[in-house]
Amino acid sequence: MKNILLMAVGLAVSASTVFAQTVRMGTEGAYAPYNFINDSGEIDGFERELGDELCTRAELTCEWVKNDWDSIIPNLVSSNYDTIMAGMSITDERDEVIDFTQDYYPPTASAYVAAAEGVDLEGGIVAAQTATIQAGYIAESGATLVEFATPEETVAAVRNGEADAVFADRDYLVPLVEASGGELMFVGPDVPLGGGVGMGLRESDAELREKFDAAITSMKEDGSLNELLKKWFGEDTQTY
Image 1 (tube, helix red, strand yellow):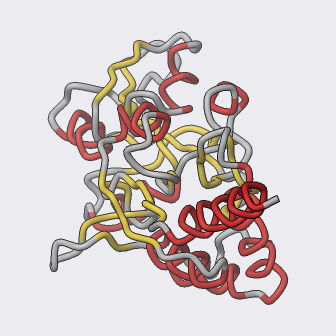
Image 2 (cartoon, rainbow, N blue to C red; image 1 turned 180 degrees about the vertical axis):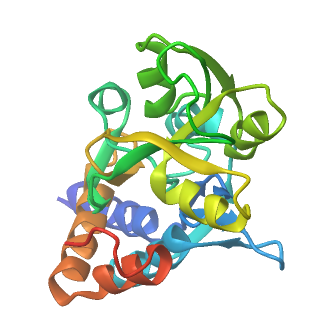
C-alpha cells in the first residue's frame, strides 16, 4: 500500500511539473502583420498578441522562440518548441505530421502581385515562399515556380525582375502594395486556399491542444478574437 501511495504521489508531482513547465511558442518573425520583429528586436504582431492572450486564458507560462520557416515543422517535432504560431494554414498534408487547434484566422485568399499589368500568371515565373500552400499551388499550375526561404525575398524577386509575380497570402501583400507607391499591384484573381490558420502542435500533445482550443473558443465567443483580427488586418477582414 505504501508503495502504491508513493507511486500515486510521484505521478501527481510529475504531472504538476509537466504543467508548470514553460510552453515555448515557435514563430517565424518575418510575416507581418501575423508575426514580425519590431524595432526593439522583439517578436510582435497579431499572433504575438493573440498567443499571449491564449496563454493567459489557458493559465500557461509561455515564451516565444524564433525559427526559420523552412524548418519550423521539423523543429516542432524535435521538441525545440511546443507550438507553431506562424500564419500556418491548416492543410491535410501538414495534419499528417503535426496536429492543429481549431483555426484562429478564417480561411482567406491568396493573391498575385506584380510590377505591371498583363503579366503571364499561367506560363510565367511566379515566386513563392518555400514549403507554403502557395508554392504547392504554383507547382501544380502551368507557371514556373521559383522558391525563396523568406517572404521578403519573394517580393524582392518581383522588384528586381527575377519573377513576373509573387503569390502569397493577400493579407501579407496588402500593406506592401499600399506602401509601394504604385510600384507593385495586385493582378489576376484571388485564390482561396487552406482551411484557415491554426496553431500547430505535436500529435502527442493532445492535452495542450485542448487547453488552447478552449482558449480560442472563449475568444470567439466573447468577440475579443474579432477585435484583434480587425486591429491587425483592418475593419474589412473576415471575422467569426
